[in-house]
Length: 348
Image (cartoon, rainbow, N blue to C red):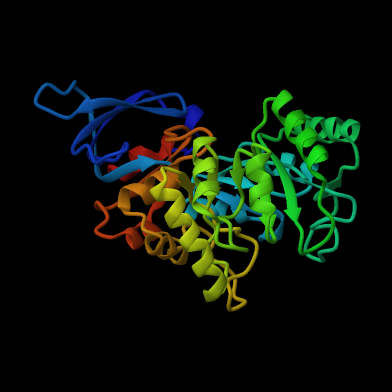
């Protein structure tokens, strides 16, 4: 059967086990168009024609921080084969990303922020890896309105801002507030790259919705962490890209954030290399899973990080399949992303 979900006929599946916040055991799911709907526990009164599926199903996994233009041209297909149903690009050419985001039956779904919005001369304008048009300098409130509108017109689902004080200029507080306000007016959440002492505090004070990296430049005071949690701010993990010393700072901050009730999202900064200079895997990264467990996340918390974010718990177009319920968090690196329209193939 074609994995193109929109072509798949209606069907009801009996799955050996399902995760939807907790493990549900044998369950019925109904396919309608491109979406799976949880029906309820399987039992003696199941309707006729039910298709038995081995293994377990979970909502589609998401990497909440990637840079697709730094990956091979077939990256979205590779990412789906590596267990990811959705990826969120946090900095690239808006036009290039809009083209890559066109629906692809065999690839991971792509959402994107468009270009980094940054101060004139700010990060990543001086970086050789940054593709053309992947940053947009903003110098005034009027310019902020136009820059946000440009990303929205390209199809951006969030706005990415750069507050990297160690790499170049950053906005003063008033212009930072203007950029955030323009994104709010456009209905888009704001994700910030924060690096350098004091930049996480500035992002929190400005009401940024998410941090693209768990803060790693300094240990944040408890009161600041609590403020971030109270505002509903989310942190994308991206722990495994750091060397040991920096990673320890980030992990301690994540541990404090989680203890205060904060929500962590799984993300790897894919497109950037691992600390030893090697490429990260094209899919769910066991090193990131291990770092999340080091930060105190148990299996449930890691799964929520993988399926959470803006549009949590998706059962649309692609879902996650595993042959058995995982016995450890690291087992999640062996998950498969399966098109809703190809579930019949799993039944053999």
